[in-house]
Image (cartoon, rainbow, N blue to C red; front, top):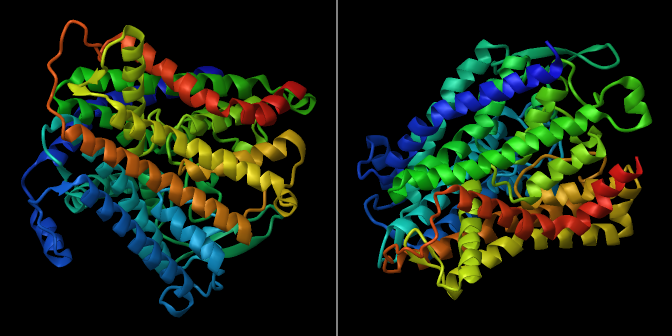
Length: 554
């Protein structure tokens, strides 16, 4: 069987598995977010934190809860990292510098998990479990909670209430993320992903010497990482490490976990708004971009442009032999189209156009299917823009799901769209203007620029993967990328919740013959065009200076 055929068989198997889970998981999440019943353990948590589980919040209160939770999480995680030398299970690792600890705390709370350190050499078991793993759960839950509030904005009328953040956070963590993590941790452990705590693993280094490195609960962390966020993982090599991703089957399982919840959430959206066709339209757009990215990335890596790659016969530099080009490209497309960022190959070693596609995937806003929760609310904001554009074309007030889209709503949507590009382009420009930061690039020219552009694109979009080839563990980069991560996470949430509140206050407008049907192929095409034009072209000049210039010169 050829590698190309094997790769597309994997894609078909993955699509089939996701299709089987789309309806039951989406329906379950919808029920979870709309149920009036609380579990006993949930009522206990509400009592401890002083929350009325039956009280809804106005959108400003919901936003304050998100911001307060994030602020406390950053402070707690920063303190835990800085004090780990005095804590149990610290493994004797040296104290982390303040700027790096701040960057790490921001990174995990912002659902990014950008790591400028090796996990096993910089973090003890207690920090890994009580700090990083906890944020893998709750930061992902925050994203789903925010999109739940936005959906309620569409479904509720003449009210200023969009739900209760603390109830959403608790339910999503306990009823959704935790059960899936437990089940698939067992699946991965049964298929070769190590799962021990106090043991030591013998690892053969590139020099052929055997050394001892501390082990940890890798299988559980791997599932949590894939479901919610990403990062370098326990061994810093991420899913390229054989302890975290030993076989082609585990590779496919991990890609499935990356895509599972984001692809199921459109079904949740359809159920909650009372029209499953709306969910099908959204998931169709997500699926189109995902399939196109997988195909183009596989094609770019299979062409192996350049004399060295042509002589070798394949673009295998930076890729694991046990996965090959097809499975590596599938993983790369899936991880950069979501806010996951886990990698099973070195994106810095991709062909210029292949690497450029990974950057472009993130620049789209990671909406296909996007991050856990953040992908759907990003897509819904773009759907609002698409409906507004259609309204301008026909000369009538745009409506989406019975809600009018006036100046107030479009201001929030526009600010959402402009926020991330501003962070990415300003950050990249400042880095390239500073001689000291340019000196941190191991490559010059277009590829060096691509590395810096990738770093800020990954940080602002809360992805967490990196091109490599750039020294980022400096005071400036830790600070700048930390700011990009926290602003890239929280500012869009501000605008999403403001939009949710504005929509919830409206009186629904009945559909008329002139209302744009947002569940048909025409809308799917319109929304896809808006994504490419409004979002994609924003970054074209930067892409032209980086991966496009490099590709044309090779």
